[in-house]
Amino acid sequence: MRCSIHLTVNLFGLCFLVILPNTLLNFNHAAPGEYEDCHGFEVELEDLPCSNVYYTFSYNRYGAPDKSDTATGGCIVSYVSSYDSVNSQWLVTTPVPSSLLLGGKVTPTNGHSCFSSGQSDYATSGCEHFGVSLGGKNPTATKYRWLIANPAIPGTLMHASTKVGIPAVTWNVRPNAGVNGGNVVAAVIEAEPPEPVCGLCSKWGEPRWVKVFKTEIEYEVDLDHLLTDSDEVPQSSSETEMEWVLLQARPTCDNDWPCAEVPFNASENELALEEEANDASKTVIRRYEFYEYTGEVNPEDNEAQPSFTGDGCEADPASPDCDIVGNYLGAQMAAAVLGLGDVLDIATQSPVMAGQVGVNYLLMLTAVGGTGPYSWSLTAGTMFAGLGLTGDGWISGMPIESGTRTFEINLEDADGTIVAKNLTLTIVGPSSEPTVAPTSTPTNLSTPEPTYIPTSSPTQHPVVNPPPTQNP
Image 1 (cartoon, rainbow, N blue to C red):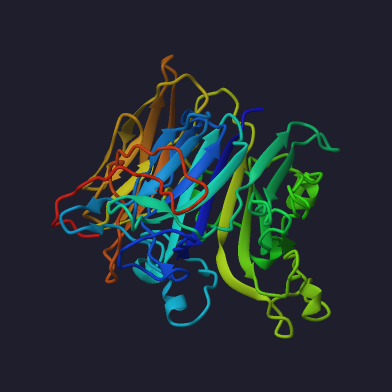
Image 2: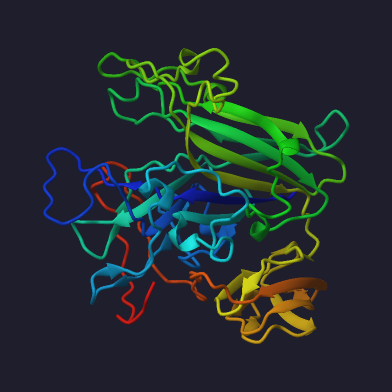
């Protein structure tokens, strides 16, 4: 069975600057340990080449990301701001959430999607939406990293010290393995392990609260449907699969020098959910919400101790008597599209992602099966003024009129096989709120191998120097 995997993440720009001991820097910057603005984001897919990343979400302030293969057979997807070298400033910024600056707490977005037409306060919310569609196989690991300005080398970015705290989902589909002969679909998230440094690996990892929602749909979805306020994404109480789960990795070494490794049991460091899908289901979708743990921990090994706060606090940590749930860190939306097969088809679902008058629009149509390369064309209906369809499957441009239209799209593969599908697109009128638009074409940046530790050794991103009059 051929399947495709969609991963999208909503998260907030909680970036820190940490200066390591014996590091000398001379600059004006945020103080160590304070929140600061982020200027990019990375998704690293280990042991999965970029050729298996067939679509990326680009309707955020950074636009279309760059994809770069690594020397170890993986792929790095980089959303990176351009840099104005004349005025020495980054042109795109994910700001610190305004609720934190006002002394409050980050809470779920209540249906808003952290992208440029998803909420009116997107410019100041500090929330972003990123996503990738994968085909062929799962990566062995997926890592998310915020990028911040490197104070030592102006015009370059480095990894933020902040851990994103949102693990990616690994799917496994076993065809016809269920008791009723159906497909068994398993989803696994792993707790973030402790730091791989002697003295730290003997402690438990950072604890996180997790809530899980699940649904099954009788049609295929694509990446652009995995938005928080999409009908396809589960988040109602009736779709709750697990209410509160504490996810925390166990120590990976003992406490004796030279810190010998301890036996590893994956099941003790992960949340695994498995179920036989319904016969008619074409897509299984899960939404994972992640929150800070603010309860007590064992001071010696960092193991979370929610029961120390009071009886029942592990089962209901958000109750007034417990209140050990901190900031909302973000959500991971993940979908496994089942049984795509080898027959040529248009996987993009209708209606497609909506657009807005005066805002750059960018949508990649998705094909499955058949033989590449593919050729796309508009065969019936009229595209909105300002938008166009390219032969390689991109609907892009800046619409100058609003409304809802349905048009027919043809897809032809290299063997001459042709399929057609009607797609509906809605363009809403201009907003009175400031809107940040995606770039209409990818920014060609070459991303090198990521730097892990220390964070003061920056990831060097080549700089794109736009005209100084450009405004974020």
